[in-house]
Image (cartoon, rainbow, N blue to C red):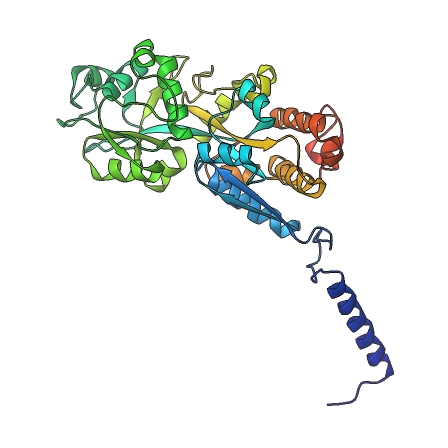
Length: 376
């Protein structure tokens, strides 16, 4: 090897000095364009809760970590578990498909805000019935779930689906065995649509189902429905697509039969009156609009108002702000509807009222002047 000349020695010395200084500062060499600094290098955030948003939270976290020195680890343990851990301060944030009422938030000194929107869909396993062919209205759907319609060739189903050859099979109802936000959204729709369901069964994360068999999680319900001829159940839309289950049309509050889709979920979010909802406590089922899917729900972030270290609250708000500003396309790719931009600005205003010193730089401006173009 040729001995280095004087210029090369100087260059090697400069590189060596820079490497030593970097190591002493506790940082690692970073890729061009990274925002990573020594002070931010070790920030790891933890979240836990609803299973419904886990795919998009994981996707957002991965993309955000490529651009920023923040790692977000999210554990899908269910909405109830996420709320409990947020209250116990064992995670930085919880996630729930069922929003907490203002009184419960105040008692635990929590702040909540919506993050993403999706739909719960009926799924069936019927010979010769393709996705989107079967039409259900609330009355017939609920009588199926109550066990009052026991056969798929029942005259009421036949009348609702002229021209469709329905099989002569028994109806098997499949429901969630575990308390879940999915069941909370679904039973809130049923209770809002039918006084009979509301008085007999009610709404909640877990209810006493009159008939049927139980599966654990969306995956468990999807598995039973796919295996049992004549089955009908409910899952989140992403799971229905993943398992290639047969979805149905459903009559909405405007009297229109609609298909579950990103557009029909987005229509529900767009028609919802978020500005008048205290602490964003809003149930999205049965929203108005001809194109609105009637069983739509949001997933919410729940956080302690106090006690966060400054660098951690800054990192959390930066992550959530990035998701609102840059995560819409990723959400759509995974069959979620992004939150409307005007609602995201309402949420930023809520952050500003609680953590003014921790606001992301672009989001620190008043909501009326904050624009997507102004964000980094």
